[in-house]
Length: 205
Image (tube, rainbow, N blue to C red; front, side):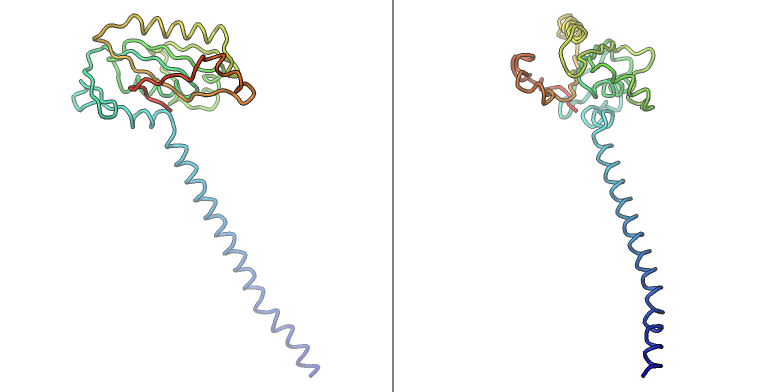
């Protein structure tokens, strides 16, 4: 009996070590697989809302490059496209639009929050930056999402461009989000007067 009691613990311990080891490996592998799947889901979600891909899902050119299709409507292109926009993601949208439209884009004006362009440059997001000789003029303002003189200058420039167009011109309006910081939500109508009306042909992010 005493001999049996001495042998049993050794027998009990022997098979447990590999089982525990393989169990740990299996759990680690499962955890790594879940982490990789989570990363893939995250990357896919981020990719789906990037300004460039979003804009290309809304806009396209016909094979001859003579018509611009905005969802289910088509517009004749003859170097007659103008662009305006405002919001955090608008610079990336404008860069994608200019690349798509090429010579048909005559002029553009966009208003972006102060510091967005520098942040994109630091992050190496070249695809979200306008080319050096872009036809799109960039205004930065509204620091901390609050109206200021720079944001007013941008709004006036956008209005001036829009008011100078004719019936033969096309105006592409890019809008990225709308809202106010929680700290200023109570006075949002003092800034805007009312929630903005979104043009039917606008491209929003």
